[in-house]
Image (spheres, rainbow, N blue to C red):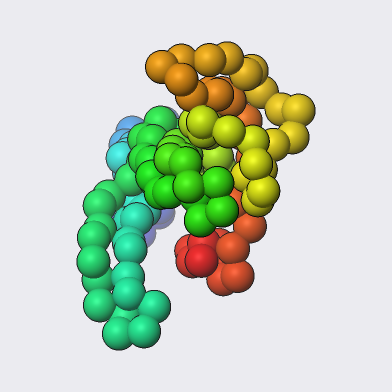
Length: 142
């Protein structure tokens, strides 16, 4: 009697009766891993804060390698408008993609990079891919 019970277990193991359960479990775990990797995207938040009060002045979600944002100011020496366009690179670093300026005077950066053209009275430098070097960590550019 006991020998018959042992023979049935041995026959089930040899027949592969447990294989489908293990295959289903492995496939399920594989799908979970693939799903997490496909749907998990790095989430970045672009935040502008007051340096003294730490008050958040503006914030927005930003995607890697596609979302662009810009900053406009009047240059303190040249007294001309400047617009710079940035992008978050695949490595999570902020890079300058374009710079629009009306002159190349004191303190206005110009290196022979990218493509330079004129548009509406502005010198437009495109495809710069110039990293911003801030004083903070990777998550804190300035």
